[in-house]
Image (cartoon, rainbow, N blue to C red):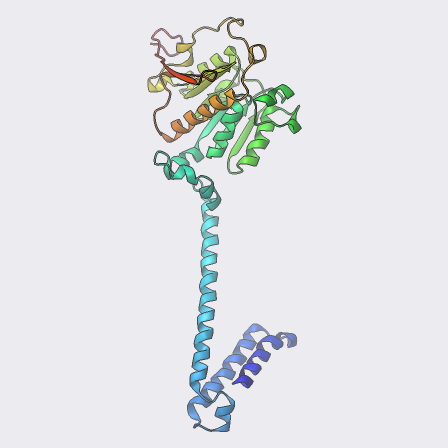
Length: 345
């Protein structure tokens, strides 16, 4: 039996050195083992040829069974691997579906009853525009990207300054002088490569706002002046786009979701007039707690995720005010004004 196995090994492993292709080597092995089985089945016990080729067919049957099991195992393993790779490639190629890496990334969302797989698909399909990549925009952008919002637009005409780094955590010291939208895009791409980031390095104006907003399902306003806030609100009302708007100063922040199309007020219903500059000083003039934008900006991302997925109750018709100094939150009812110039009857 050892002699036959030695011959078979020589045919298979030494044959390539003489230019023997796999097919020829396979045929020679078939001929060799066919002859062995013929001798074992036809020759009587004690025959020298039968003894030289194993002595008993039972030994060969055991060997064939073991080899068959090994080959079957290897074939089955290769089939499963090919099927797994094929399934992953199909998943990545199909729009709206998730790769295995994305499923692992968003697992904590998917197990939430209020979001689940359907909600995560809505996030992947959503397009959100964020006004400003500063204090409020920074945490909003980071949590929107981490949540898997498929397309995120950022508009801002400012550059990263040293004084920003106390609160605008999306930027780094190494990116001082870089336009904020490109700094934010770099950070978000590093955070989640599965989302599309669209930077707009320009100032928002009434000329470009309608065309820009029309590409998005939801707008988050983190701007720092009332002129921009009223422009954002007017454009959202005209296009019927929901708006999550927030503001911060010193130790206090406020946030609400404005969407007259769903029965709530617009921003102008609550803040109809642009206040005097002395009554609404900027963060540079009045100061601001560095962690406060993180709290309110994260709330903006929460409201966006809730709106997109349909989870819970949005802040429509409610103005949430957070006082960090005393650790208090208040909800103020915000009603739609019939005489509002934008959304009133």
